[in-house]
Length: 298
Image 1 (cartoon, rainbow, N blue to C red):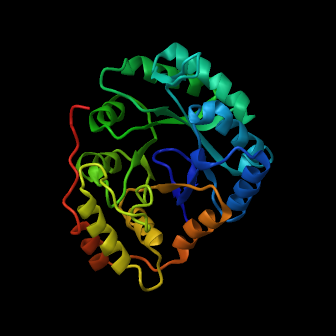
Image 2 (cartoon, helix red, strand yellow):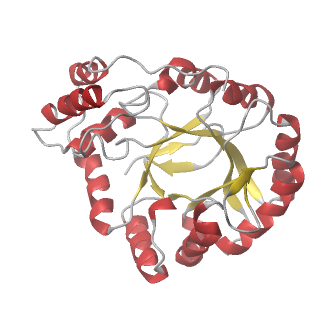
């Protein structure tokens, strides 16, 4: 396992991060899987207060309680559940963030969060107020660093210009190369870490039957998956090839993968010992599809 510095922070995160959203509801089974992950070198665990109405943070907190000094806990804030449980509303206000962190700390059974991330964001948000909330939490020692989870380049750009974020989590895969257009270079230039999620694109790059994805048709998805399969005959599975494509992109700090079973975890970890993609193979993958296009006004 390799470890990379997360942006300008002093955190060194494993090149594979554990996306905890996929965990089930069995605390004992979740703890067994998380402990196996730490034994294999994974030290970054990403959750959110939104996941399973906070129960995801609870199960992660229970599993990591005895390993707190050895792991990096990342969680997210900004989506407020309605009182009737029917859904959630976006809330990036200072008051809500300052209140929410207290609940996350309790659920995670810790007195600090390593990386507290805004779970979304729009250009209409009171961005300075949101930043102020994170800066207050830094001063109070309740968080060590903060970042944002977003796919919107205009929002990301504002936080790069006006805040002290150390990371951006974003969707990135062969089927979603939008970050290459407007974000990756910007974040590298400003020494901001990139947590990439969705590397296998909901399984479409790992054997799942093709279907439309973003602006790609079913046939285009099938074409890309076919190229992945062609390049996976010698020492790599399709999922490993898709993960390799992400991990070998300059600027990517870690690939956050959702895992629910030990077999899934082992499959992801085996990527690290699989054959690297050559420059020619990367070019073949890139040429298999036209680029995505961002809506720059989102």
